[in-house]
Amino acid sequence: MNLKAILLLILITLGLGAVLYFQRDTDEAASKEEPQFEMILPYSPDDVVRVSVIYEDTTYVVVRDGAEWDMELPDEGWGADSLVINHLLRTLCAAPFVNSIPLAELDPAEVKLDKPVLVFTAYVSDQDSIRLEFGTLNPTTENIYILRRGEGRVVLANKLLGPMMTVNGFLVRGKSLSGINPFETVGIEVESGGRRVFSASRSGVEEHWWIRQGSDSLWADRRKLNLRLSELYRGQVREFYRSGDIARSQTGLNAPVRRMKITAGSGKTTVISFGKTDSEEPYLRWATSSHYPDHLLLIDSWLIDRVDLLLPDSMECRELADFVPSDVDFILISSLLDSLVLTAENDSLWSIVEPRQARAKYLMVEGLLTHIDTVNAIRVLPGGSNRGFDSPQARLVLKQGEKLLADLVVGDYVGEDVYVRDRKRNIDFLASTKQVSPLNVSFRDLADIPVRHVVE
Image 1 (cartoon, rainbow, N blue to C red):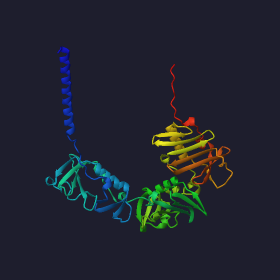
Image 2: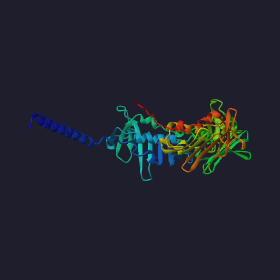
Image 3: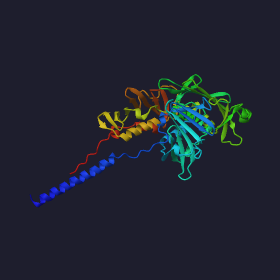
Image 4: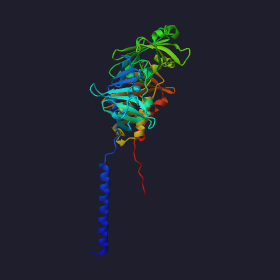
């Protein structure tokens, strides 16, 4: 064996040895468990079904109702502020403690665990719960003493946890003006000066909103309605007062300027009355809500401006089509330029199948769907004929499987505008020609055909 062969074998041996050595270190490092932090509340927030908080000699008890929370104490039947409760749970379930000390090594009175500042109990079930008793702050380590009852030890948590746990009746109590989730609402009525000015209801298989105007029914814009309802559902109550504490003549609630009735699918009804603005704080307005019986409320004054938007003219649906772009998997689009059929292969690929097969420009197709989803007509037209729909300028059909999502036809031009009919909902619109111009596309516009480079 020559010298070169011997040197080559030595190098290979050394290389294999190095690989085995470093592999051993890697395996040993991987076998070592990474340090696991134990959380103050070792539950998942979603698993907790009941919470009890004792603070400043007052006990607050809330119980889960799906995604929301209801109060059991001290105001049974009231909604709780779900944002506050969920925040408390997420904070405790995600906060690790830095150390633990056996209870026997501490004087409970010295660290105020004999009379806890706050007691927080989370229940996963009647048989499974954890009680946390908050004591004083350690001036040296700046950590809070927390006794986990039944474990015989006290854990130490970062002092920043303290302010997050401060609660009171106003924080825990629900502050929704209506108490009815917008997506559970099936009816709305608004009165101004004792006269009904708006009435709408939700019905049908697809749960569309309809505005009642005399003997007619107008298709309502559910997005606008849900926005108005959301503003009344969110925490808009700023202060609570017992009904007997303030004269109704002082609040203007003896002759409300607006009255609103909201009905849920469950049959629950909330009646809201709007009084006058507060004499000292004009940005607040007096109100009552049947969701809070026997109470007067101070709410954001601007809410009445939102209620005043609930009028047939402003809430009537002027959307050319009512669909969710991500639901569409079939498109038929025809115009004087071309007639195309497209299908979605997956979430990021559209294909043209007629008049011939080609890959479609994904961003252009998605942009077209988004545009049609957001276009509003100039106005809704009464039923009529002679608008050119028998020989349309363009047509757009959208489907999800066999389900028809939209069927739009573009009729005659009227100056700079054009007639559009939604055949699915049987509604005629007058729309801007510019708004429907994206329907005038050809195969060349949508086909994603690679450019061929010829090298001579």
